[in-house]
Every structure is written in structure tokens, then in C-alpha cells.
Image (tube, rainbow, N blue to C red; front, side, top):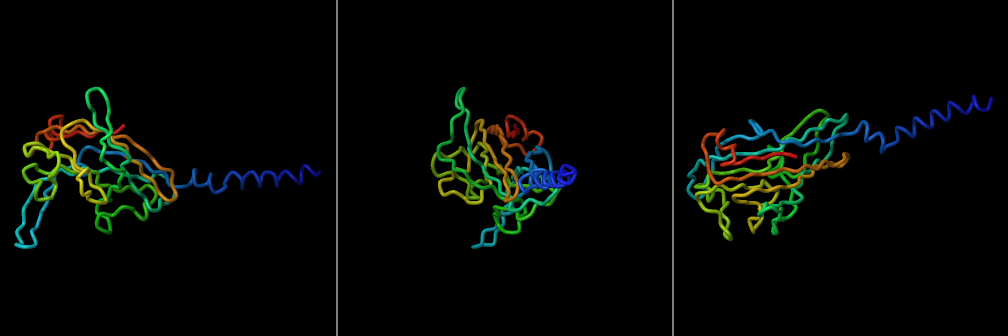
Amino acid sequence: MGLEVGLPGVVLGWILGFFSDPLKSLIFGPRLTLEIRFKQPDCQKINLYIQFPSSGRVEVAPNYQFRLRVKNQGLTSARNVLAVINLLEKKEGGEWVQVPDFLMTDLIWTHGQFERQRTLPILSPKADWLIDFGHVIHPQQRHLANEVKPVDPIPQSEISFCFDLSIKPANFYHIIGNGKYRCWITVSAENARPVRKQFIIKLGKKWFDDQEKMFTEDGIQIIEY
């Protein structure tokens, strides 16, 4: 008789334990994913319109923009979502070598509510949003965007890749030249497990006005792993 009375309580206790907060969050909480779609609209050619306040003159600079897509595949909203570049390495000979002056830094959300927005307050279930990863401006017009490195400058005939960080470093470590690079990006949220992914950037030397030609080994390629 005691067994019959105690069994419902045992079952109830098991159910309550099963759906405890950590496990509930794992099963029913937000689940973040990160990817790059190397095609429009995530990666595309756009024009930058740069105005000079002193004269009011406007310059148009062709620019290739590259964005990452973050999706919440869970059942509840993710809160305060943040994306960080953890490490940047360059292929030197047969080895990967850490870029010495590159610091772990946040990326910015595309069309955020605030300028250079670091965190996304809410990412609803089954929704996705884009993060600005970086861009390649026409090398002849880098000076218009203040992307000319004062030390170890990149030749004006060659393209450069500029990471879109939440800050613009005074030592220009966010700008890289020709070569093969790899970086790790972590996306995390206040109430979700972080996801970490590796990206390979192959940066050539040539600028192409045609997007299909630009997204080649002579231009730029970005591959996720």
C-alpha cells in the first residue's frame, strides 16, 4: 500500500527534476547558429557615400560588404546576443602564425538600433539577424574611409580587408592585406550556450568591379568550418 501511495510522488519528483531550470534551458531555451552565405544579400557590392563636412562634397566609393548570419533555432528568445572575434592567424609558409597585434574584439550588428551596436537585445525563436563581418573598399579610395595603414602600409594597387569592429583601433590592426587567414568567432547570449566557428579568409590582390570575379582566389573568398 505504501508503495502505491509513494509512486505518484516519485514520478512527480522525477518530472520536476527533469524539467529543472538548466535542463529546461537546454531543451526549450534558445539555440544559436552561425554561418556565412557567400552570396547576396549577405555578401554583396554596395556603394559608400562619404561626405566631407567642411565642403559638403560627396564621394562615392565602391565597396564589398561581408556579413555573418546568426539564427536562433530554439524555442525561446535569446537575450543580449554578442559576437566576438577570438583569434586571428595568418598562413606563413606551412604554419599558422598568430597576428601579434590583433586583439579579441566585438563585431557589430547590421542596421542596429545604435551606431556600431555590440549586442542585439532580443533574437526571437526561428529568427535570424546579420552581423557586419568586414568589407573591402576600392583600394584607390581607401583614404576616403580612413583605412590607410600608417605603419606597414598596403600598396594602393592591392585590396585590403577591414574587419567591422565595435571600435576603430588606433593602430589599424583591423585591416589586413594579401594572404590566407583564419579566425574564430564566438556568438553568445545571456541565456544561451555559446557557438564557436572557424572562418578562412583568402585575400588576393586584385579589385574586380564584377562581383563574380571578385569572389575568386584573385579577389576574396571566405569559407566556414
